[in-house]
Length: 399
Image (cartoon, rainbow, N blue to C red; front, side):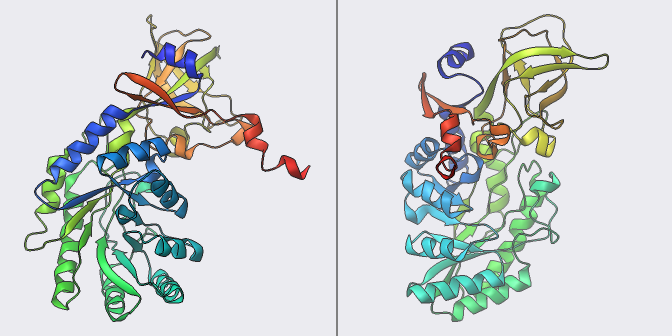
């Protein structure tokens, strides 16, 4: 299906996901761990569309969730409760209680305070709960500071000594069963050595715990595998798996891997239509109908997404691709060599399958885009474009 046909059928701006490519990515990563028991638990925060979750669940994927809403989405999409993990720094009491009642695989604990809440709530419910402890190995992941999570200055996890204390408390508890250990040093990782170092440190902790008769069943390595947006050299799944496996000799744990961006990032595009061009003495602007409220990454991270003008040639010149939102930070690309465009031309913003729609908003009272899946040569709508009536339905009754 060509972009022009999709734009005519579903309108713009529009998210388009290649499910066939997502399936290939899943099988590549799962196959890299074929020598070991493993669970690929998709990081729902990357793209939480229910049809996507259902598709991944049918491939055998679990779900890594960072809110009870994501847990509900995973279960609603058919992912089994025993493949669902609940992570995240700040879990409310009601979220913890619901996770326990739904009997998910385990809750990843991020602090001693959280451990106490899980233990107390499990006791109140009269149901013991399985947990993992997120260890912060204090290793620089060499990525963007906003998506770095493995340094001691970050809010995530606990250091090794505090982790030991939590595991000892869990061993003595009737209501908390320590079954997993977890680390995740950051997202968009393109260097292998920090991953190997973190895995080695956490594996050493596992061996210490075994020495005091705390048997860890799940070695949760988090996610973070990077993709190519511009000129990055992504880590190959085989090399990634071997780096982790090399640290686990003498152990017999199930490896849990939580990819998000790796599975869906390069499998999605954002399609937007040119409204008009504007030139000033110093700049050329291509003004499109997509905006920062639809795709936030460029404004939030100054992130690079390749942009292609569909079916246009001609002499290229530098241009900023900007949207209608009333902010100077509303841009999709800056200083790109692009051919001349006219009203109605289409621009494809690539590598938009992860952290695209899920970070969108109704800022400026703009409806969020539709989402479309491509699979087996067919296209289908997997989320309708929002209407004005949808946006105001929680307010209008109070007028």
